[in-house]
Image (tube, rainbow, N blue to C red; front, side, top):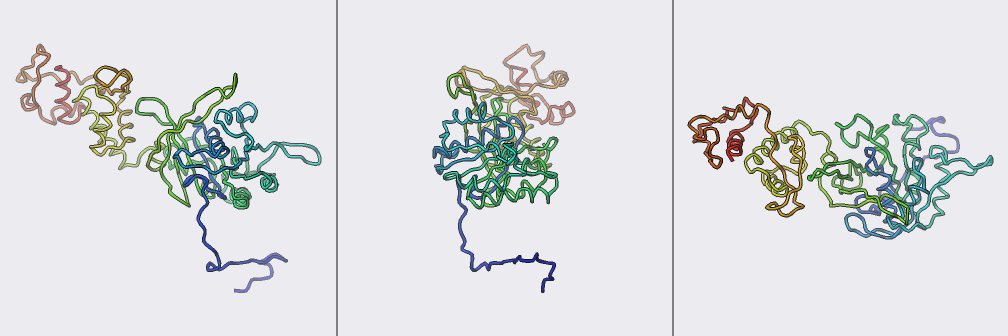
Length: 412
């Protein structure tokens, strides 16, 4: 088809390349599977998950040629940071010091010198001018933009406008071979959606990024609050898995307090699972089954060491995540106990509290021989008690085994 004179601007020429003339090359990874050279990344999450601190930890690792959370060695390189929210002097640099970063390899975008004088750097206006500056930084490996939405001067909820605004970011990453991390938030009121869909603004933020990382707070089995970093999307590698992490406040130098990242164990699963997004209907069914199993187990066993409960749950095909949600739903809070549970720092799970009317429904039939529990050590089997599975179901006590377990517990 012949193009009209109006199809291509005067002096312009559209060029093409044949696939046979293109030499294939592998992705260049700074952190294999997580941080790719020359690509744009999004780091999103709820407030309080330490997204900026986490990004600085990556910069610190590069600056010292340290090791990534999975133990792989990092490359050696510099980082360029623009922050529209935190001050370098009292927040960002102290954090880097607490992380033992090589500060000579960390650079901050400061201001812009116009003919009229200096003015604040505006990502939406000045990003194309950043190319020359970035190329002059020795061995630049990482660029952090916090928040990435500031690079969009127009409506950040419109797909086309976001794509046009972020194209200079994508071009810069490809031109100098640095990874770009744009930090942003999850939208409010989106807890029931897929993590990728929760990224604030247009879906173009997540679509343009080759890798989207997400953070969230979680509750550990011992009841403490933890944090999780998960891969919500990757077009160039694995799109699942994550790492636990925590944030510690420490003394960066005498009298100067700052936060730093403490990495935990690697964890497997989708971002939806790892970030605790509400389950699909079939997953909710698994939760119901897990609750019934856990209630039966603890009512039968009594107070049990946490590790024993988790081990038993796995033998019944119940995942750690589903077990934790079942525990929370039943109102079971792990507590520390000593003695027979493995020492003073052992964590245990107590049986769930019974409904207020449960005790009335558990009046012993006369032929049980337990009377009014005058024999505290007496134990009777279900057949001896003559209990049927549905005898107590209407009282909300669940399965036959649960009812019998409750009787045994009370008898003791």
